[in-house]
Image 1 (cartoon, rainbow, N blue to C red):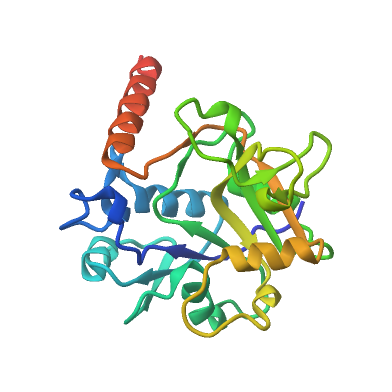
Image 2 (image 1 turned 90 degrees about the vertical axis):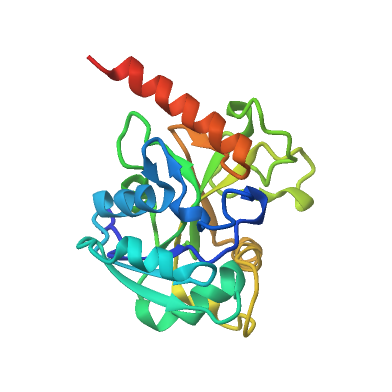
Length: 246
């Protein structure tokens, strides 16, 4: 089994525009889902997987996130302040020196997933990680398991393959969505733009080189992009918790 990366980057700088008015006075990562903030759910998952140090980027209402995390002991938190939003790719690149030449997790602070029957999703991804052939290993979730999802999907993935094809390059409809967590090798950032850019550019680069791989999510994945979706997710999680209660 591959060693679990000991470091991670958590994206928490965005404005959460689609979640307004809930985010008018609260950063999206600090909204509560299933009794915990989305940020704490993310950090708890990293801690459970064995991650020891995490960079959290900050911009919109960043002081509230700093205050929220000031007493957290594990994992150890380092903040990366962005005077201007650097998007998902630029934000990670700004802190790249923190990771040296070792692979690391990158997680969105506003994604909600649950582990499946085989336990920690992040540990499973680490076990699958192969630096000899992978620049990026990311989590995908099937669109068939998302009845309320009305999008086009992100990637097409055949039954016997772990190498996804981006929807615009696929002859068949995309049957998976990008679910958030990923393991990244720092080398993929070589030649990346300065300033703000999307992590999607790195996905495309890895795919073009044959070094983009996927891990299928075994558990649930919840879309929490709007206040209505957040309410629905809380209702689902509350019902599940009630069923598990003795």
